[in-house]
Length: 162
Ligand SMILES: CC(C)(COP(=O)(O)OP(=O)(O)OC[C@H]1O[C@@H](n2cnc3c(N)ncnc32)[C@H](O)[C@@H]1OP(=O)(O)O)[C@@H](O)C(=O)NCCC(=O)NCCS
Image (cartoon, rainbow, N blue to C red; front, side, top):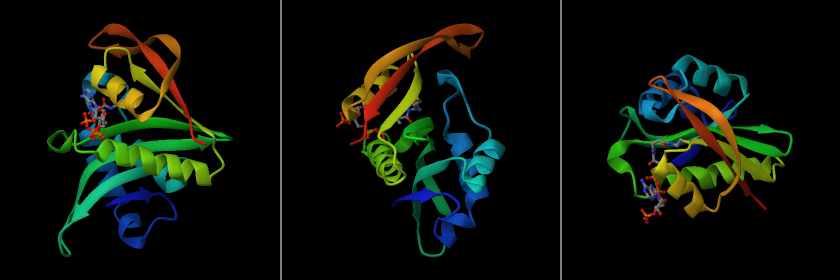
């Protein structure tokens, strides 16, 4: 199921925000620049400064599994995607698209009309994914990422939500 984790999320999710933040930290790929510590993800979600669309499954009363997450925030009428990752074993099966749709719906309900993000210029897989979703390139930030002591640009992508 794809749900929102935030201050108002269902009890079962709310009680597991620390776990979700830890699992989200582990899903991130170090090659693509900016990574978020579990403590920071947890703080952002608990405070309401950011929300996360998460894809989780649970069998019976057993533990949750996190298959992907999209961490985002609303700043006035702009939404910003801070981080997105899908578990390697489940890529190319629509999880990333469901997460972005959830994120878009939530931002629309918060009054946003645009979503933007920064992506590593060499992250071809993610670029194809975002373009396929409908994002367009709107800018570039020079030397934004430092990967293994090499500087790479970030491409700024945006999509209008309405
Ligand atoms: C980018 C990412 C989130 C995509 O998630 P996903 O669940 O695999 O995406 P979807 O299955 O919804 O893909 C939808 C479409 O996007 C495109 N796409 C997705 N991944 C792609 C890839 N690696 N190469 C080319 N096209 C891709 C395809 O058109 C795909 O449709 P198809 O599978 O029918 O061809 C995932 O690959 C990931 O976690 N990557 C590592 C982390 C990362 O780079 N995050 C982005 C940082 S800004």
